[in-house]
Amino acid sequence: MILSKTNYIASRNLVAIVFIFMSSQVFACDICGCFMGITPYYNRNSISLLYRYRSFNGYNGQSHSLFPNGGKFFIPARSQNSPITSHAGNPDDYELYRSMEIRGKYFITSRLEINAILPYVSNSERYNGYTSSISGIGDVNVYAGYHLVRKLEDNFKQQLIAGAGIKLPTGKNDFKNNSGIRYSSLMQAGTGSTDGFVYLNYLVGLGKFGASLNTSYKVNGTNSREEGIANSTTSFLNVFYTQRIGKDVQVMPSAQFFYEYSGGEKYQGVKTGEHVMNNLMGGLGADIFYKIVALNAGIQKNIWEGETDHPMSAGKVYVGVTYNF
Image 1: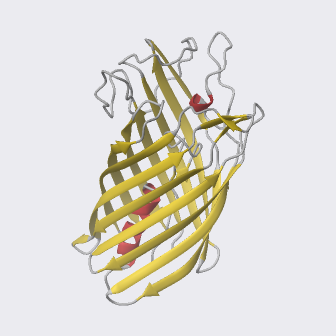
Image 2: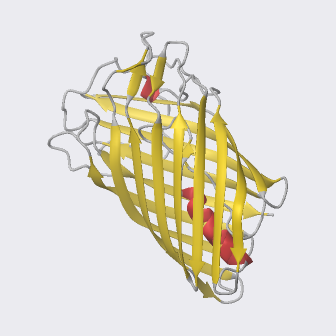
Image 3: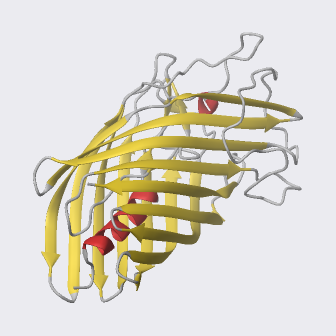
């Protein structure tokens, strides 16, 4: 068999870690993403801890570095001393978005799974010489997927999952600086809105090779301040290879491509034209599996981006661990 139970863990975690987790919101910076898990071929419950980092710093004079000068990869201490300013093309400006997430998956039946994601969010921005960071519980995601197709032949396997979910406004949405001025909606830990999304996940395996294609569409609501984000779409293509090392260990390298689009921010139901997202990223990932435990890591850099007013997306990094039971 091409994808054994251990291989299943590999496939599932690869996709789980790099797809649509509309974690805080479906928009910039995983303000856009919702990494939703997919369980290829075998049904296994799981609990995961995943850390995600994303960088924006694309003004003139910048190198579009994934790790800008002064920025921190891990969650920094909270700092809300800076004034509220706006980008003016300063080459030192950046935006960093981080999320530490607890994820759970449980199968109600052999074909119906439910999932939940609880994120702890930390966002930082540097505007014209001033740096600020906020941290707090983000918006909880709950979603369900149904396994429409599951064919498990010896040399060929495929699976199709369709699902839908909801993002709840559990994250704080009124962080302010020490002068009492509220930060922008993108800096907040939560959106303050209730959003819904649908998704399709398709995975195919032939020999030691496999590929998955995931796509989602998210309908975003508005918060009490009449702020919102335009409906958005994300797609993720993942091509992987499975190599067994001994009896209990498997290594799974992968090539990954991620596309996202959003019409940007809305106020009172009208698009403002700000923070439009339209970009393609690509990169590499590696998953290491030992029995029922998986370690996951990956990095993606920007390949192409449409013209927008937002700083260029430099890329993203993720690391995680999953326990299957």
